Length: 447
View 1 (cartoon, helix red, strand yellow):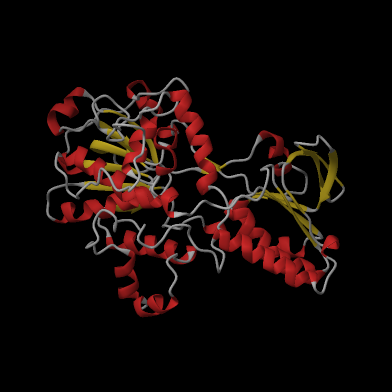
View 2 (tube, rainbow, N blue to C red; view 1 turned 120 degrees about the vertical axis):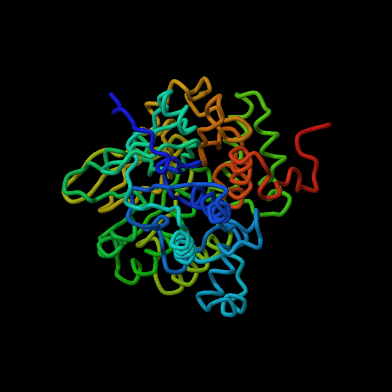
């Protein structure tokens, strides 16, 4: 049972953010000028000690898949002090970045940029584990206007007029592969999210198998391949996808990351919308063409000096199921989906590049479940302001792929969504919100 609350306006904020990933961090950055001006109060909480973005995948040469303009703030406020360009300027790297002539920041640099922004803000609180968000008692609502009580482990409760969930996603492993993570003498198998801490022993393994075909799988395969060949060991790459799909990065397709495409997808019947979302995933969950070409060029160079069949295979259209542990190795059952042929694959280590998923309803929101609108599949049914409740005070970020397709997880659309959330909270359009950016007509006649 929740404890009684005294009326403490000093602990009441207009916005309480739970989770400080790129999307909530972007909201905090856009809200900071309002906080500094005394127009808004806000507090953002994360149980981690500091910001690090996918630390297990910060490979030295890897880049993010969106241009630097898709930072936390620029597409909402190009004049913001929290832009990536201002970060470069204050770090003394702007001219070097200009000479580099690459639109895409290094992944480690993007992570450092986000950490830098967090350090500039007065509203971020690290090491604060939010245990529950529950509706505020009527007495508290009447006294403070707070609609929610935010319970934080080891800290006083915070009373919030609005709550924004931005907890992100967790590594996902399909049931057919989950047994590999539990095999004896672990870790023989890891999720790709844990790659960097395991890289040293993976490079020494007699054989390694990369399972999956997204950008992370490609980068890890490329990272291991050269040394495996030089060491006389193996690295194999297997995916269920029919081929090693590249990301679709042509400009008319990029127009689908737009307000009008988000509106179009949201307006479809649920079955059509779910089908559209599945089809759209191939546009952004593939491999960058630069990485695909670099891997091919590496294979060609190595083939001049080595018999690559002794060191690597690449297999597409193959379903993989963990079978058993045999000695110091793992065995997987393989099935070629079109031909139906089957085989057993033995490897000493496996890297499961099987993506990420978000909980349908984060555990800390369970006390508020009765007030949350859900669709028939148990997913957030967010309104056009990205609020999940009828009152319009409980928002969810990056929990909307099923509603607006690739615009949900796209970093570049984060400032657009955050501008809408800020408008809903403040009652005014703090940052101009584009309604139409595409040259093409999206969504049929009269849409």
